[in-house]
Image (tube, rainbow over all chains, first blue to last red; front, top):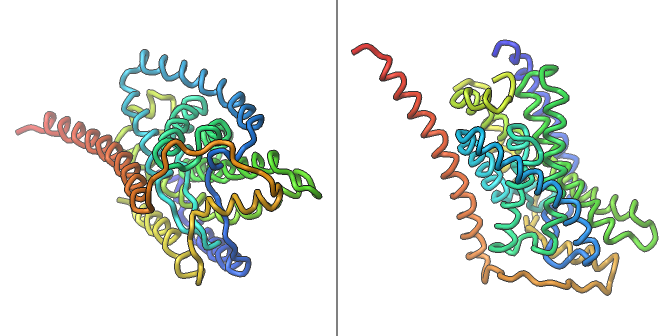
Length: 253
Length: 98
């Protein structure tokens, strides 16, 4: 792990940046609602549209999981791990510098391990659980919330992982992948709300700026938390499950 | 554990705690309700067309269910790492000359 030592020296810089972000947010403190779209809050046409976007990912993900379990039964344990990680992280509502709460998504890890399609299933299960038992998110908005958290987020993580792997220290790539997946999840949520509720004057752009500005600031510290937690669990995996990582084709293990 | 691992754990904890002290007089609500406000600002006549099938009857029950979700996930994670740890220990013991 010698080659990653340079990365660790950069953490103080990150901490400084965090403090600066927090300070900035202090002056613009406002409440936000950085969570999934609530039940019944997307007009039926938009709800249907987002289901149509999500379904192909679910279908491919389902086929991939079936094949994976058949060809590599030992990967079931890792699938459970990826799902469990998303389960824990999306249950943790954390306070943010805007004075409101939101929660991380936990989808970055699974996307790195299994790719975006498999993660669309695991993320969908988490969302379904929360919609049915917690009145958090919703059944009619499940498609839209799945597109943000279980499709766009994992796609971002997977893209960063594939694109930067080998070019940066591995911990750094895992951090960026998970952080970006978390952030883009909520950027997508803002876009979905802005599409359904364009500003009467400024249209989609004004509405997106309104939703997005609130979302971004609330979610930044949480996205960083998610990045850190994903690096931690990835390190633990490298130590205890190197064989499984290799079997899944996750390089550098 | 590597020292950088401890630093990362500390950072994650700080990130969760600092906002509580940095932002005074904040409610730290999940504020799903405030989304309603923002949406009705843009489109005053919107009525949600579907209600949740089940809503936790109180904040206590809701936090119970969230805790259950976190506990289930954490339990699975602990099982995974405990299982892996045990496998490795077992292998080491098997190879160790006695």
